[in-house]
Image (cartoon, rainbow over all chains, first blue to last red; front, top):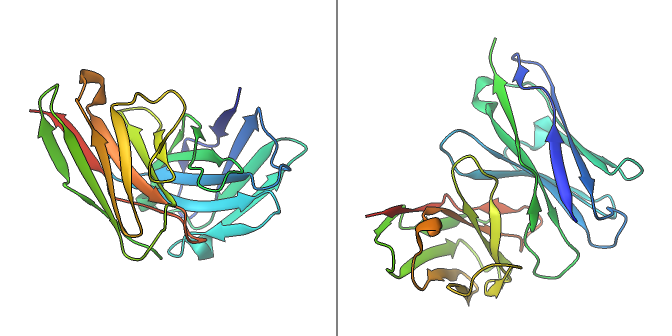
Length: 121
Length: 107
């Protein structure tokens, strides 16, 4: 069974750095073509794709947030970590991680439950 | 970055109605287009991938069509549990994006 779970602080002060961890099971990020993304959703708003890391360690970032984001993986721990610098109240959102399997047209087939982050002084 | 535009913003329907949701891409995404359903307080759920393939466990009243820049999600007969927000998502480019969502609400 494939599962993902996000963890991190519920409250962050501006302009602190946010560190979120996605811990997964049931698959390996060493498998060719496997990918894990981070997505966020501000209250009442649309989904926003943030970043992705692939099995070959290629990394991709949202154009608008690229300067503030870093994604990394620890395959021995089955974890993907996202850091976001210079946090602002506008970054208040639920943050999700999701898997995309190694299939040509695959979507994000399994999502974590999400972790809510509030940015406030 | 590829922009996805969904229409309408809100669809007001009665159970048993047919729902037609649109997603238009600013450039071709071939068939690298997925649809997700999201209910309040829940994570999104994959419905359709590859523009027209149903994900595991998705009822056959959900269908997807289209290629290139124009895509449609159809719910043949809306069930009470289908009232939710639906998002399209493209992964044709290196930088992935979502549409802004269509809310299917009870009329």
